[in-house]
Image (cartoon, rainbow, N blue to C red):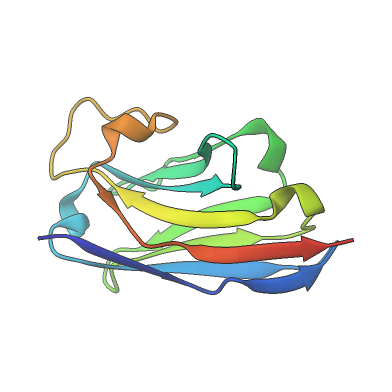
Length: 127
């Protein structure tokens, strides 16, 4: 059974930085990919970034390119999202997600290709 637990959220001001972490247990060490999504109340879940677990290939949505960096530590089974130059538009609940082991149909930006989700960590950016 795979479990994901996010941490690192908080309240910051425009231009500040935060580092989100996701601790994974179970089969995530062999998952095809992991990613970060965010959701604001009343809005659809939005994909933020994803990473291919084994080789570290990273993918980003356009709005965070150049500001966010996704990474993973295979040994520690952790996923990280370094967020710099935060803007009010980044305010959301951030969720960590992972595919099943060996999922060959993984699409980084599609939530339906992820099988496991954390409970979320809140990020609030004030102007």
